[in-house]
Length: 243
Image (tube, rainbow, N blue to C red; front, side):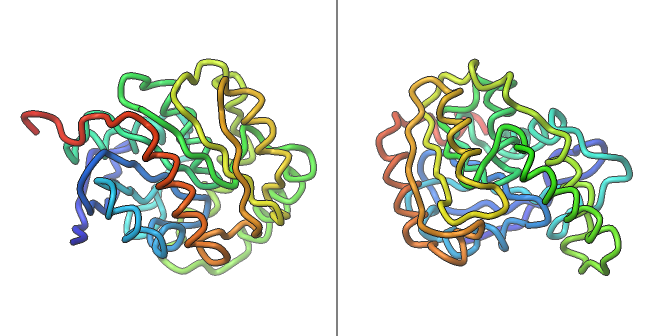
């Protein structure tokens, strides 16, 4: 069963949040211009068969109100962690996609007592020069576009990717980590995944033979990688004892 909930504020913005399933906690962090249903919809049911899934929409995504100021990676990471805690999760893995991998790494760096594992898909620590150029062009195109309501915050989210850098966080990550490289990805190219693997001690690397949209191109294979990896990670308590 899926429920939509309003959770703690991020600079006075409540993040609209999906909670479903049971078992060890799993927090989802979606990509720029996406939202939970768009980026994880095809695999949500599969993930929820094994986990208590908590999945917030960023400011300006889904039904979460748009931010009035530029997004801050620290605040966003703290905000998505707060949704998991408010939903009753004491410790949880984080599955990040694209921008969500930056959010996941920053969350693990800032809240190591909460985050038990990371799965970083189509991810990056910072944009390499060729991706920076694509992001700059995407930003300009988006600034001139008529966006649907569920993508109202797309401009702020693309800008957050352009100016964020989590390379300094990587050495502090000690939890089990799986980096999933999307091998035909022309936006966040696979060499970005190499940076994550080299920077996080003990990180494992897996590959999906798809572009930047694994939820469209390889959802079953993606879900198998996530569930298979997390099945090997020692369970954290799924719920706070007195939540």
